[in-house]
Image 1 (cartoon, helix red, strand yellow):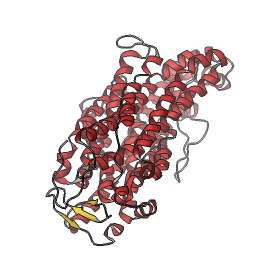
Image 2: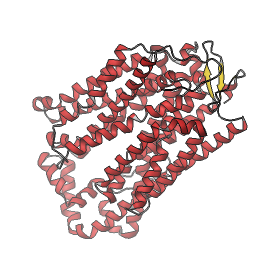
Image 3: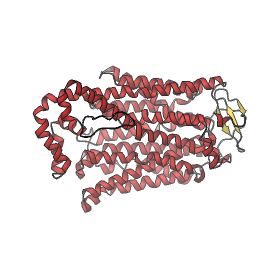
Length: 538
């Protein structure tokens, strides 16, 4: 792992090259582990439904627990990362991943001894604990990587975050081969598949127990927690936090919707498209270093945001052919660099913020995805699908509209299309009949059955075409409107590029052991001391 040569005598971490490499690989393996676990748990939801008699709503709540504690955990533990050390956070994450596995594996025995609801809460708890472990990993590994490679933070943060799509891809392949009603090879019990993530987990746990970890750049320079908190109020850092909220909206928010939206037109190829995008992200994140040091990270982010906006807009274009694959390629190229490169910029420009600055940025991105991205894209989807169906077939809309309005922020409430009713129309009530056999006394299922037989069944054939068309239109428009977010990001990055050009170009900031700040030009390696107060103004 070659480092750039810098003038100015900035010290390397007090680690041997072997220990540095070992700790970085272990950090990479944390994202492989949580990516596999996240993908496999999503893939075995159907098996849980069949084995324990859960409805789709039950499964949706369990799946949601996988993100519930993520953002808050990153932010909370970032306040302590520099104080307690990265090793302590990773050991706690390791312990929670093991506890999550044990709790999840208890679902079967608990179901047989205490019934369905007990199994439901067991799986919910196991999934929620998993999300807490994910947050702990993120709180530790981002500033840890910045500490391991103080002269090349952005490059190695991009390599680090190749682990997430890598884990998702491995988990997706496992699900494709061994889960569902028609697995590519053979159906394997979910308990075995849900344990696969323990392989990389045990590796990073072993390394964490064995190796001596470095202290952070900020702690080595004697920066106190109070000084870190003061550093995060720098105007430019607050601006970067706002941009990271947009990244969470467009990257993770679209991840939670894009496959669902494209399923309407691509069917089984939607998962293949998602895997293809993950492969692009893995490759590009490994190659980010040379690009960053040629055009600087803000220039790369500007280009990435332009690609993201263009690709996302054309993903909403009415096509199922080459246009979709080209658009997905452009979108994936852009999305590859958002998250890790932003963390790299924050680590390079605000080292006094320590783990707190990077943790807040990542946490803000996660919370934005959960509270703004997912709901916002869903609202846009509902609004456009309802408007389309109202114009083409008002009577069909009246039959399939949701019973309650959907609200998002300050926008006008909208009554979207009821997804349960759409699913019933799509399969002519087959899944509903199956769910009723499992839960014959369920009031919500009985209500849907009554609606289907008395209201919808006489119009089933005539409703299907306009309802499907409206659903497809709503999803496409949601993607195109969401493209405004990366377009706004591009404008923000362009402002930052122009700002640094006016100041002589983008430079990284390093701290020496006395807390003195040194600006380093990443392309030339030249370093110069900064005037007091510069980072607080920038």
